[in-house]
Amino acid sequence: MRLGYKRLSLSPYFFWGLVWLVAVIWSLRVAGVFQGDLVNEGGWSLVVAFVVAVVSPDLSPEFLLLTFDAMLKTLAYAVCGTFFCVVIGSVGGVLSSQVWWQSLGKGYNSAWLVVRAILAIPRAIHELIWGLFFVNIFGLDPLVAVLAIAIPFGAITAKVFSEILDETPREALFALLNSGVPPGSAFFYTLIPQAFPNLLSYSFYRFECSIRSATVLGIIGAGGLGYQIYLSLQSLRYQQVWTLIFALLLLSGCTDFLSGWLRQQLQLPSRLDLNVLKLKQHSPNHPITSSPNLFLLGAFVLLIFSFWYVKADFAKLWEPRSAERLAGIIQDVFPPQWIDLNQLFFLSTQTLAMSILAMTGAGLAGIFLSFLAARRERRGDGGMGRNLVSLFTRFLLLFARAVPEPIWALIFLFVLFPGILPGAIALAIHNFGILGRLMAEVIENLDQRPLHSLTALGASNSQVFIYGVLPATIPRFLAYILYRWEVCIRATVIVALVGAGGLGRLLTEQLSNFDYQGLLTTLIIFIGLTFVVDVISTSVRRLLR
Image (cartoon, rainbow, N blue to C red; front, side, top):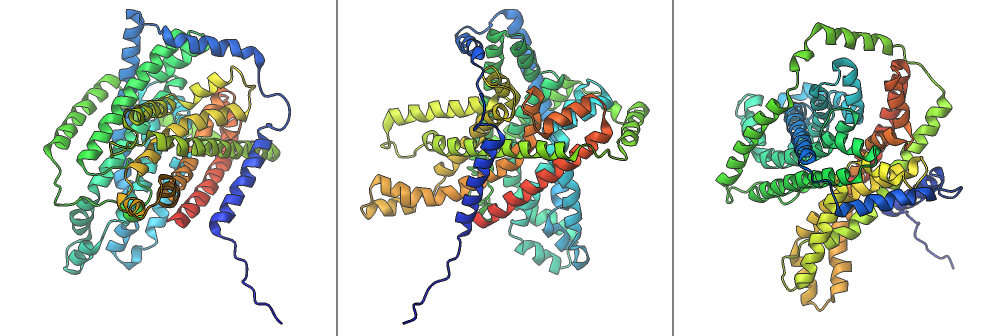
């Protein structure tokens, strides 16, 4: 008797899960977790002193005035950088959207790939590298911080804007095109109004990111809260560190609140919706009230103030001296110097391992804390105790994402020896603060009807959670983790400043030593590694849709 059988097919989810598990074990091995001592016992006294200082921050009038000035400078950098970022993103988003070129005719169908390829290069390079590069051209001018935020964030914004435009309903667009309306007019009268609320929502999310980047750029001498925290931490003045951290929390918390309020007015519940196939379209039955208009007026006033407060010398952009320095750097870069390939390969593995460990820790912690941070609409679900837990968890997530990764890395270097492990932990803490908040919004915005149906059929709370909540949230959670992995691989550069290793350490050394030929080689390898991560992340996210 011949037995029939089914050919065993490996589920894509199981396959990628297995790949990730192997990658985590490999990353732990690269980090040296399975060999040698990792903990510096002599550093625990510094950690205790740092924690104890939280109850006695420096509140002297002189230092509070310094802190206020640093906070305004960080805010102004973020505002100016975001302004240029949105300008670049708007132009680049249209030109890199497939629907724009389709509206022009058949001869332009492949042009959007060229534009996307061009924009992929600046977004693959972290803003810190841009900042160090511009320092060599413009010196320690506020212009450096503004451009370092605007260029890479503009390229990232262009990518997201193009995805929003491509997923916006286009029936009205083609109806006008078939009626003989010019492509430009048809595009801007049909797609842009539909996509505008989502474009605006993401712009304010990018502003939240700019606050954190402006803090990081302060570490290389741009000034602001990041610079002051770095100086105080290096001189072991922990009371001052906590004062500055509280100021950073206040700035980040206010930005978070105002951004959330605006999205609520626009009926857009999520900061960042990666499930672009289901982007929420603004309903004409719920018109935008006057409150966001007043908010935008206030944003315009803030923009004017920020440019005045920063006092960036934009004339340096067209000064002959700046052009000469740029020409000299370009001349020094070519031809690239092919340094030790074994060293580049080893540092690449360190960078990849650091990002994998960071996102694994951030993802697991973010998923767990997101359920605690999510607000419940039903008052009977936990009462006052549940609300207090949610409030405390939200503050914990805000604290984790407000403190820059290099500061977290410096703190962990008190008790851990230099290497990729402190960098991975620092990146994990910062990213779980971001992921936890994004994931909490996914939970808050769940369609409650399937959950009520399960409850009506007699399912217990645990069964509703397992069969209703998890299947609806886990794919979105994984999409966010993969998206942050693309960001995290770039962020390995900034923790390298404090001794975390990887390609970032080599990049910063080469920039400091003006080794531009070696820098170009390392940058090519780093961009290539970033592209690999981007391709993997994008492929898996498409699978999750």
